[in-house]
Image (cartoon, rainbow, N blue to C red; front, side):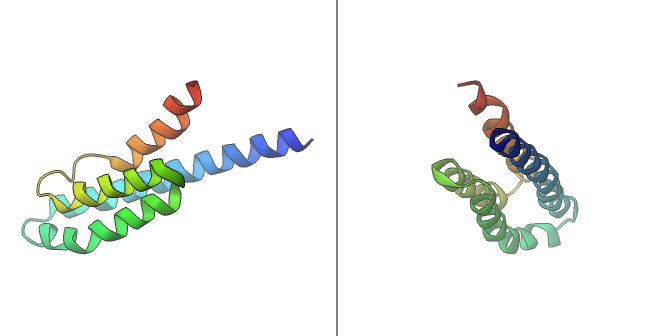
Length: 98
């Protein structure tokens, strides 16, 4: 019974992280579509994005992902990179193969 509970909790987190990740990637890309204002909003979104990445994905991978997300949002014209979705793929698909 306990094993089934753990699997259900993992599936819930997996779905939650994917939905939130897609939402956060969309927010990051929306700023790219607004000329001039978009690059200014990246200054505000970059630290928020980094903190959200660390909150969603614990441990070393979350910290590295948070730094990547922060820099990706801060550097102009890199908003198109879906950093949250890439982190989800790493955590739930690539890392679970090991």
